[in-house]
Image (cartoon, rainbow, N blue to C red; front, side):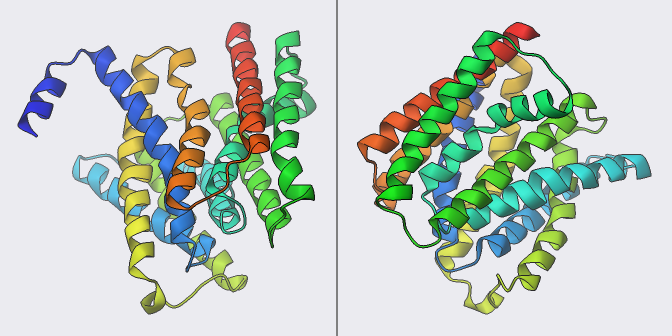
Length: 305
């Protein structure tokens, strides 16, 4: 342990950034599998609410101890808006969806958000893109069609369509949140802001879970779910988010965005090993085509900047 700490201490900033990117790619990929394990016995909405409540409190307590001021009324209104799109809908519905679809498919749907951003901006903001963007869009949609083909027409499981719809709604909501962030940069410390968004979202997700009867009594939550939630909080919501922000600050955008292409691959491999989730040729080929389409869209957007 001391040797590892010693090596890390003498790393350059760029080396640490690459290490942070690697951690982001791998751990965020495995959180889809952890979520799948968590929702085996507990409704996904309840899992999401518990996760956001614990992680949000941890962030806010930490930053209040460091002396961060309370958000202003204007900042709080913006936090509420971002929490609605990025955590209440995006994270809440994604956690709900994973009970009906595989962790790999859920991760793949989430990866599509750059395509959704492009479509939303073209429709509502009249944004114009180049030919590479449209090739990427068509390639990504073709890949998704290949992935969905086998399940939709051959091996459809109970609740599959509902799970896919939830995943798509979550992905679109995440896209809207990203557009809002891009249009009006955050004035708070990004870590502190995320903590508030998590804390704000928790009671709303709890309320929605209770109103739709997606809850069980806390004493009936099994140990494996609590362990999974602990992993999601400590690694998915805290450690990895810190790594993600660090890599964004110290690596070129084209490099720091690579985690988005690695996440679904990690989720599929981990899901196959730990949960025996099926990996067919349709899923493998479709996923590769989809990720390549998302890559083309991201590349075209970076060229346009």
